[in-house]
Length: 161
Picture 1: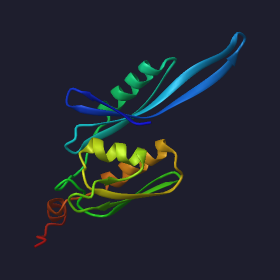
Picture 2 (picture 1 turned 180 degrees about the horizontal axis):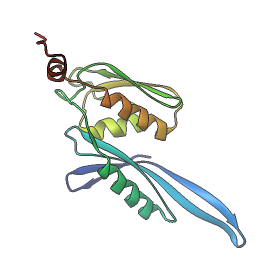
Picture 3 (picture 1 turned 180 degrees about the vertical axis):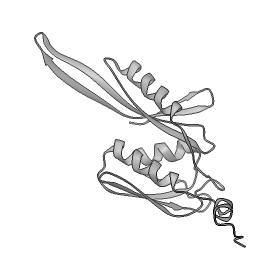
Picture 4 (picture 1 turned 60 degrees about the vertical axis):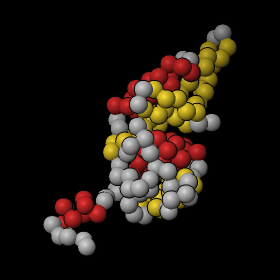
C-alpha cells in the first residue's frame, strides 16, 4: 500500500490509509486517517499521522507533521553502524547491518522508514504486532539508539582503534 512521492528534496511514503465510518441520520459519514513517512535519503526521517474527511487532505496533514518531526540517524556505507532492537507497545523490531548488495529486507512499514532514511542494505525482523503504526514507532525507537564509533569515542572519552 506504500506509495512514493518526491516533494522537493524529501521522499514521502504513504504507509497506511484507514477509513472510519460514523453512522449519522442520513447514512454513513466517512473520514480518513493517513500514516506517512518522510525522509531526505541522507539519514533524516520522520513520521506523521493526519485525519480529514477526504484522503488528500489527510495525507497532506500527515506529511506536514512528518517533515516537522524529523530525526537524524547515522547511515554508514548505506547500512546502520550496529545491530539494534526497538520497542513500542506490542511491536518489537530488530535491525541488523548488512553487506553491500543485500538490499532492504523488511516488511512494508519498516521498509518505508529504512528507504526514506537512505538505508540501502539492512536486515530486519519484526515481532509481536503487525500494526504499521506501532511498527514505524518501534523502528524509529531502534534507529534513535544507533551510535557511530566516533559518537562512542566522543561520549566515553576513549579511542576505539
